[in-house]
Amino acid sequence: AQSVTQPDIHITVSEGASLELRCNYSYGATPYLFWYVQSPGQGLQLLLKYFSGDTLVQGIKGFEAEFKRSQSSFNLRKPSVHWSDAAEYFCAVGNNAGNMLTFGGGTRLMVKP
Amino acid sequence: NAGVTQTPKFQVLKTGQSMTLQCAQDMNHEYMSWYRQDPGMGLRLIHYSVGAGITDQGEVPNGYNVSRSTTEDFPLRLLSAAPSQTSVYFCASRAQGAVSNQPQHFGDGTRLSIL
Image 1 (cartoon, rainbow over the protein chains, first blue to last red):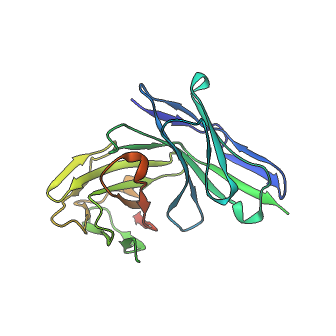
Image 2 (image 1 turned 90 degrees about the vertical axis):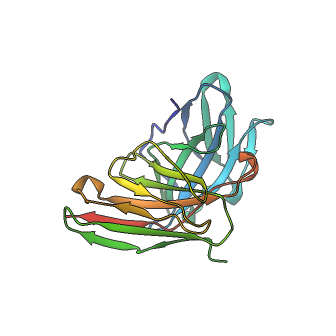
């Protein structure tokens, strides 16, 4: 069975500082990996996705993520955080059939001025 | 372009009542799904559909029914609400085809409280 772990429930960073959100997955085959962001009272917006090829993927809003098969990780990074990045972030793994997404528990990001 | 529309946005029910959460999409997407979001647990898949007339169970289907009579609509039914079903419910859709090219689109959610 596929699963996702996001070890950090809450993270606080200062505006302008760098950010890394951790994600570890479990999946038997080559995974489809996603990062979503959720602002309060909103649905989920796709930040980026990984299916194959280059292990460093670029997303929207200046985010990037690196797939490391040996560590079963797909960590999300941003070099300089903006106050508008405060939100909850979810990592997810999808099965090859495309009919099931399994989400991690989420990481809530707070940004200090 | 409305995308995925969920109604209502908020609802309070008493234990044992029935209710239907509505989901409609205007993108002609074949694949639709329902998730519930609970604190610290991310989103969990309840039911999904790969096209009109076809539905299947996800990770947490008990207590919920679905049907898919049209491509646009995918309602979620609670036949006898229980307090454990208090949650935020999200509907999502995506086009068929290669998963790599077809991201899921999410609605804004329905916040449901069962007393």
